[in-house]
Amino acid sequence: MKKMIGLGLWLLAFALPFRLAILDTEDLQNADGTTDNITGMLSFVAMLALLFIGYALVDSAGSKKGSESHGH
Image 1 (cartoon, rainbow, N blue to C red):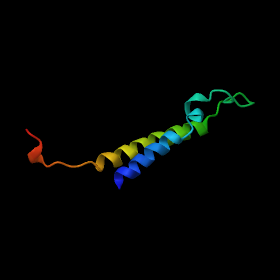
Image 2: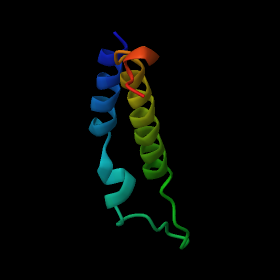
Image 3: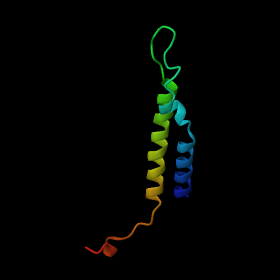
Image 4: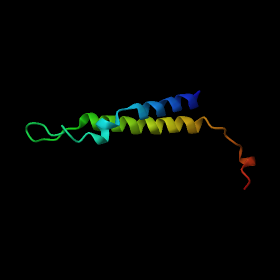
């Protein structure tokens, strides 16, 4: 079950709009000369969080072998 949730989080992370995060450089400058890309920053941070949480879930769902079968 953890593995399925982790894979779903990965799909959701890649479904986030990357255009807002790193590719949209036009329309960043406001009329007063300041720069604002809060939407892009939030989507990038959300993508990273979903990737790492998904990895943790998929990794923890893997089969755990005992120390006897390690071979050392």
